[in-house]
Length: 198
Ligand code: SF4
Image: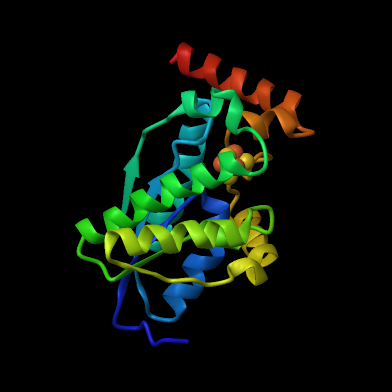
């Protein structure tokens, strides 16, 4: 494993619970981390904000800088012909990894990685392929780590921190597939009502 203790990398963050373990590991190794929240796949907007709030809380706690991009691109997930064979996930990973690679270059950092690598529910190899492709295109390095070994540890840390732990990946398809769909929709409605009442 390369010594990265003098390096500052960009960490693409999909959500706070997934960030717990990679952040802890990288910071323990002395790696400088700059966070980047860019997840236009998360729908609806109220859920996007809810996850962003968790990331803000965690990055504040860890004392790291983090950039936030509020882009939400729901229309891509409403186009019917890509909803099969993982093509939508490929596009979803590609979009996020390309922006992360570009941001790495813009910030003058050496490499990037992503908290998506911690989740056993993601298509890990497809994600890695997309990230490596994005790194080559941007002329930066992708730091691959199989963070999945720390998934349970990270979830325990998130529980101890009282973080919101979502029950679906992010897009409308994954929400519709969730066995918690009705509960999630109820929570979204409650949050929307609350925001309207403020
Ligand atoms: S299931 Fe997850 S990775 Fe796949 S398209 Fe939906 S949000 Fe993206």
